[in-house]
Amino acid sequence: MADPAYIVDGVLTDGEAWVPIATIDVTGTSTTTITFTSTDDGQVGDFSQYMDLFMVGYASGIYGFDTSLYLRYQLNNDTGSNYVYQDLDGDGSNATASTGSSNNFGWLPTSNATNVFAAYTGQFFDINSGKYKSVIAQTAMDGNGAGNRVRLLASTWKSQAPITEIDFYEPNGFAFVAGSKFSLFGILPRMVA
Amino acid sequence: MAVIEAIETVYLEADATSVTFSSIPTTYEHLQIRMHLKSDRSSSSVDGLQIDFNDDGHPSTAYSYHWMRGSSTTASAGGLASGRLRLQNMIAAQGGVTDAANFSTVILDILDYRNANKNTTVMALMGSTGNWSTVSFESGLWDNTDAVTKILLDQVNGPNFMRGSEFTLYGLKSS
Image (cartoon, rainbow over all chains, first blue to last red; front, side):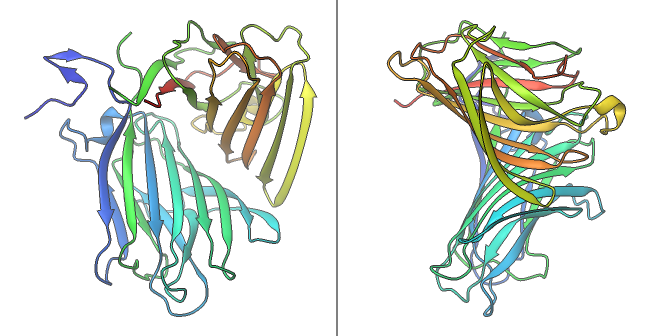
């Protein structure tokens, strides 16, 4: 088994702090869930070595009506009522805020607007700690005149377990449009004193 | 050559009044501090995160800051000039009312920090949920053209960051 990049000739080093873990490119019309799972093998896909995780996404949902769907996240396959959120939304005219108990993440455009995708970032903090897991997410969605949304979101998964899996999905079960793309990066702490 | 490097991580194993990054290398273009933190302020579930550059803060009139935020069901914006740079959204213990495991998040970007001909403007994304539920995008100005060589973080009220708070300073290279 090869060593991670920060182990050089058996010595711990501080190299690139942001490590690309995986990219998922959606093909076809049946992908309803995007899943990133820790490989638990000491390699780049092993979440246990990272301080934070960072997701970059670009996605749309297959639905021939309306202008927007929802994007949600789920950690460690926890379907319980253990998520809370706070958002700040702009729709091109007004700014609004809301809070609640769900695993909201962002808005998802629909295939009703051809070739319109939304851009996302999602940051997961101190993922291996015994604290609740905190998330900050950004959504930028422009429907070229209809369905304009920007969102800042803070969310907390009220669990003290390490994060070992992250899922993204549309809660009504709509699939992602082919060409949707999600990338996950691991962010290392300083390791050498 | 690495593009983003972790310069220093501070993980508090006991409550601490402040966290300082000093002797910051001059080999980067930009800095980012990623934080997962909480104040031990007992009288409220929110505190402010204070930032001083180069020990300019006791007192100084060189700072100002503003924000837009969503807090519960209210969207708002505001700003102040002050003797300290005060970001407005750090969760506090409120004497145990806030869940012990609940911390808030900050991503603080400090751009072109070693340029000695420009004032320093910072950009922050912050998030908290619980009794204090707020997500915010904030900005701050240090009206001083000195290169940033030292960053001190503490609280408006505090008096401590709580055990388990984590701070990592990253350096970003451009070439």
